Image 1 (cartoon, protein in one colour):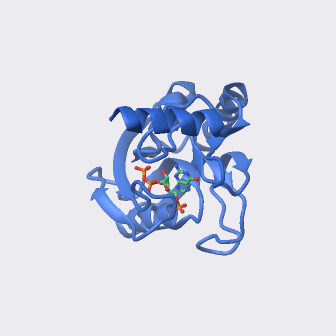
Image 2 (cartoon, rainbow, N blue to C red):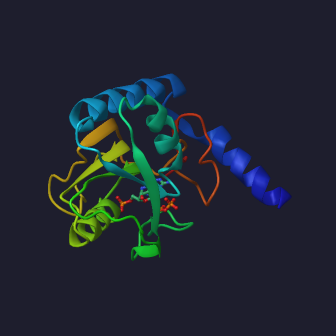
Length: 185
Ligand SMILES: O=P(O)(O)OC[C@H]1O[C@H](OP(=O)(O)OP(=O)(O)O)[C@H](O)[C@@H]1O
Ligand SMILES: Nc1nc2[nH]cnc2c(=O)[nH]1
């Protein structure tokens, strides 16, 4: 356990800070403003994608200027790895989304497999429309669908393995107060 903590402190010490906490805060406010403007009259059902979406959702919700019904779901495909695998549903949403506008909130759109699968699930369960909001869109050409974008994007970040603000490294450092890239990844 001591070795684990030492390794994780070393990862942080050697990481590159790509986006400062102040820049992330500005991006969250901008996301909240855009979402409020677009969804204020739609009575949306918001789903936080656990675990990574936790911090963005927590910081976004108090900034939204309309009554929000907030729920969560849990889908994962990276687990403790730095490359994605098969999407595993850990908790499918129970809320009735029939005829509703749904907003999915997550930390990152990388290849986009996760968000596409969740959006497809919501549409198949009767959602009228599904919108997506992410803090980070990673810049590369390996998207699940060419040109795939979230409806609301906070920041565009280079193609490195990231942690902080909800994103983990081996299950840790979701709490890092900024967006960091692991040395060498
Ligand atoms: O765009 P993609 O390539 O599909 O990757 C994005 C997903 O990867 C991360 O989740 P992860 O599977 O690591 O689970 P976690 O949220 O519990 O960390 C992140 O939170 C997104 O949900
Ligand atoms: N922590 C983390 N999770 C991811 N899921 C998809 N891409 C990433 C990434 O760069 N970092």
